[in-house]
Length: 145
Figure 1 (cartoon, rainbow, N blue to C red):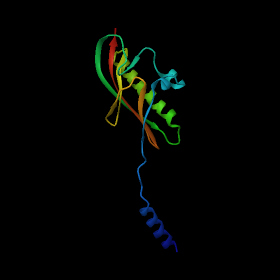
Figure 2: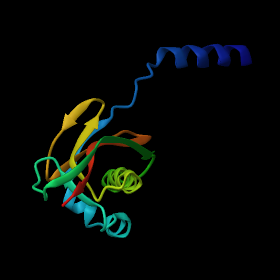
Figure 3: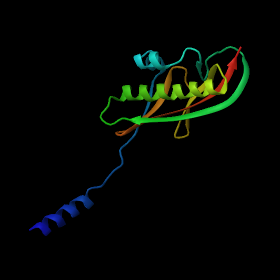
Figure 4: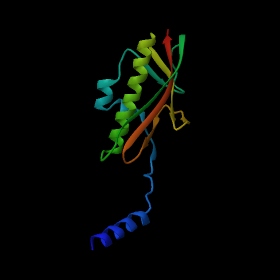
């Protein structure tokens, strides 16, 4: 009896296909994330952020392109909230790199999730699945006049 149950269980498990969870490729509002409580608390005022296409003061010194690829646990969490958190975390990492390099701004910030480049002054790209949310950004660390 036990052997029969084990055999049927094994047959059932091998017969049911295990499909990978589909990631949601989302475009979400930058302004909403920056104006969230987390954004207000974590984004530095002394290192300015300019997204691709935004006008900024003249560049005095360019320290080069920097990348960040941040992930966070998304299991059983609100998609918008978890994407905001990981986006803010990615921006914080760019700001920290700018501070370490002696920059006062990060310009031309673009999405670069799974090598899919996105440029927007109003939206960021978040890849969110059942378990993990991911935001990858690229930007240039600079000193502005």
